[in-house]
Each structure stands twice: as C-alpha cells, then as structure tokens.
Length: 130
Image 1 (spheres, rainbow, N blue to C red):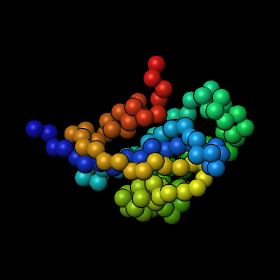
Image 2 (image 1 turned 60 degrees about the vertical axis):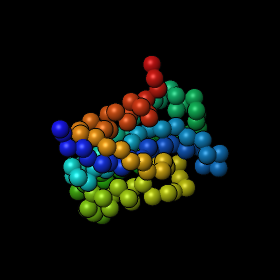
Image 3 (image 1 turned 180 degrees about the horizontal axis):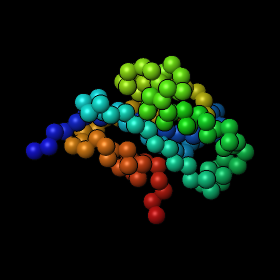
Image 4 (image 1 turned 45 degrees about the vertical axis):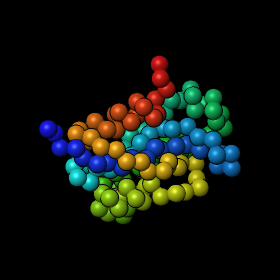
C-alpha cells in the first residue's frame, strides 16, 4: 500500500475591489512537509478576469503573482522570505491580508502522490469547467 502524505493547501484569489469581497480563483499553494514538497501554480483566464474586473491592471498584478511561485520554489532572487524553510514560506504566503491578492483559508488533504496535487486542485478549484 502506498504511503499517504498529509498536505495543506490554499487557493490564491484576485480580489479587485477588497471592499466588495468578490474574487476569482487564480491559483493554489500546496505544502506537503512529509514529502518535502512546496509548490504554487497560477493560471489567469484573461477574458474572464477582464469581464469581472475591467479596470484591473494585470501588468501591475502579475509580478505579485509571480512572486508567490518564486517564493515557493525558494528562488534566490525572490527575497529573504524565499530563504526560509518551506513550511515557514507556506505560512507567510497564506497569512490573511487585505489586498488584491489574497489566500483562502488553508485546507487539509491526503495523497499518495504529492507531486500531482497542484494539478488536481487547479482543475477543481481554479479552471472553469468546460
């Protein structure tokens, strides 16, 4: 029987007008300490985002979303947070904020294949069903 790993995840949201608390899911962050796995993925459905928030400056937003992925990877040029242990990076990224980029509450799951969780969650939580 394969080893089951416990993982935590949060959904990355874009909240164009924070006071309205309306959002579109654009990515996920997954932390699986047992498998030493921390990963984030971002996908923006541009036509959907344009319809939802026509005045949102996507060029200004993109570096913030890219930073999430870079911090998860531990990229050297992603600043001091990227040098923290993986679990600390996950907690930093998923902390509550009142900004255009926000995270959902964290959730827990179990899997035998931590490397596949991000793709599963992107399909389930981010991509519009076709």
